[in-house]
Length: 192
Image 1 (cartoon, helix red, strand yellow):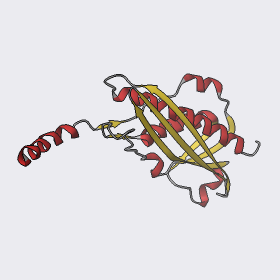
Image 2 (cartoon, one colour):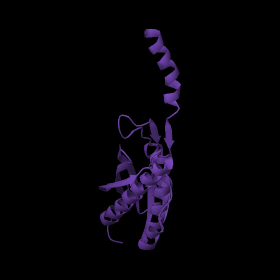
Image 3 (cartoon, helix red, strand yellow):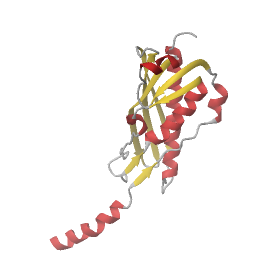
Image 4 (spheres, rainbow, N blue to C red):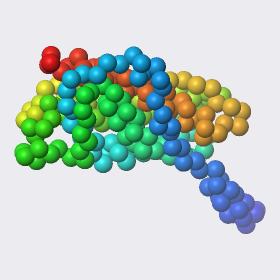
C-alpha cells in the first residue's frame, strides 16, 4: 500500500506543477481617461524604485486555486508612465532620488509604491483589491505629503478560466487605483 501511494504522488507531482500560471496583466489605458484629464503645468520627477518595478505576487486567490504569479510591477510601470505623462506637463523617470545637481530640474518628486495586492477567487469570479501609495517631495526632497488610493474590481472568470480573464480584471483594478492616486496627488500639490 505504501509503495502504491508513493508512486501515485511521484507521478502526480509533475502534473500538478504543470498547472502553474504566470499572469502578466495588460498595460493598456482606457481612452476615457485621456479624454477626461487635464495636464497640470508641472515638471514631475517620478521615482520608481526596483520594489515598484519588480513587484510580484503569488497570491493564489484561494487554497485550491492553481499556483500563479502576478507580475504587477511589469504592468504598472508603463501604466504609471501613461497616466502621469497625461497628467503633468513633463515627467522625468528616476530609479532612485537624484543627486543635488538634478534637483532644480523638477517642480516636485513622486515615489509611488504598491502597498497591497489582494486576490480573491471564488467559483467563477475573481476580485482584486489594490492599494497604491505615493510620497510627494518638493524640489529639495522635503516631504510635502503622502497619499494612498485603493481600488477594487470584480470580474467573471470563464468555466475553464484563462490567464486572459485574470489579466483584464487586474488591469482594470490597476487603472482605477492609478486614477484615484493621481487625483489625490493633484489635490496634495501646492497651487501653480
